[in-house]
Structure formats: structure tokens, C-alpha cells
Length: 332
Image (tube, rainbow, N blue to C red; front, side, top):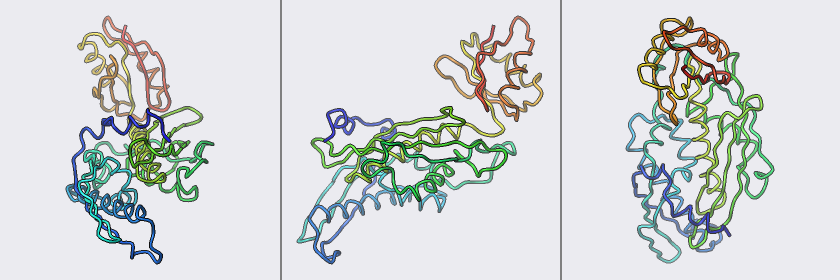
């Protein structure tokens, strides 16, 4: 039995669902589909599964230019995309069950997942920096249903991360990133008909953590709850990994000061640092300004060239470097 915290998790709307759209799905099942008539809840579970499949198909139908392989992958793991639903109507006739449900689907996230991949734009050679290395299950994942079949799980995870633009095919230019997974079913959620699971995914390179995420999944069965949580955790980790691209580097400016100082630094890097093709402000992060540079330079080399910059009444102090593609600085 899951405690009050997990029960609350069902009630609180996660950020991704706040932007979700409702799609209706209808599913039917009959006891006569089995050689031996099953229990009523087994028939209902099949009807619900079919209704959720119908809802995700309806959502996919609203997206233009769907990649065929990505569509197949989403349909095979539809429970991960349809965990937030409500029963609109339920009708029983003899051994038959008909369910109509309204499913909240995060269309923005789904669009990113299944959008047809066009020709690569921008600079030639910009591609994921990482390739998938080993996939390891922790002790916690060996309990209950675990994360899935250990024989097929690595291939399924690789397909998901490739589709997210998080990893590329292993070659001399990519860096291996290892994943550690823990999937623990938590049991029944109080006052609902749902089951819960907690999943964590940690991505490391040379023993250093590159990205991590922990997510809870909810579904009508333990295995489906695990897959829901696993899909959400992989999506979060994949987004972090996808931010690391070959041909790009992040320069974080702590306590940046007046905006004109940042603009002066932009110009100085663009005009004065050999090996940098372009510079742009790509975001703000907890009081820091983030620049993205188009370059093939290593972080250590970039740090040396930035510290050598000479600007009127301004100098660059290197605070840290994070191989392969991040430098943190301060302007003084």
C-alpha cells in the first residue's frame, strides 16, 4: 500500500499535464475473447488498455508529419503517454465492458517525440555528443517487475534516446554515456484503482554524473506504472543529454553585471577567439547568462582562450570547466 505522499501525487497535476489536451478513447472487451472466462477486472483492464490506445492514436492524428518509427514506439508504450485519464462512461452488458475515457496528452512533448526528422540544419557536424554505453539495473530494480526485460531493455532505451536527439551512433567522435536504472513498484495507491512505481535514471560519463531524473508513474498495473515512470524519466534525462551537441559549447557567465558587458564579451569572443564561428545568448539560469558557441574546441582550450581575452576595463575569470563542452566564468 502506498502511503499518503504517493496518494497526493495522483491529485497534484504535474507541470507537463498542465499544458496537456484531452482526447477521448473508447475501448471494448468481452469475456468470450478468452478460452476460459476470466475475472471481471481482467476484462475491464483490456477494455481500458484499448481505450487508452485509441486516445493516443487520436492525439497522434492531430500532429502533422509524424515519423513512422517514432509513432510505432509511442504506440508500443502508450501507457506512458496516457497515465492521466478519467472515466467518462462505463457500460457492462453480460461479459462485455465498454469504457469511454478522456485522456490528458502532453501534445507539445508528443510532437517533439514523433515529429518527422528533417534534413539536418545549421552547421555541418552538429550532432549528439554522446553514444549509449552500458545500461545497468541497480539492486532496487531487481525487485518486483523491475524495469523490463534485461535482454531487450538496452535496445528500447537506445531507440528512445536516439529519437530524442540525445545520443548518436558510437564512433570516434562520440563519448560513451552509461545509464543506471532503478524501477521499484510501490503498490496500490490509496482511494484509487491505480498502482504506482518510482523510477530513477542516472547518466554518467567516466564516473561523473551528466544527467539524472526521478519520476513516479501511475497505471492500472505494476508493469504499466513502471513503464510510465521510465518513459518520463528517460525523456527528462534525454533532454539534458540532447543539450550537449558536437560543434557547440556552453559558456555560463555568473553575476554578469550590466547587459552592455555581456554584449562586449559576445563581440570579443566572436571576433577574437580563434575556433569560434558564432556566439549567441541562449538563456538565463538563476541569475547567470548562458552563451552558446559554435565551436569544435575542447572546454579546457576554450577556457585558456577566454582568459586570454583583453577587453577595456574588463577581464574574464575562469571559475570552472566541465568537459567536454561547458565553461563557467565571471567578468571582472
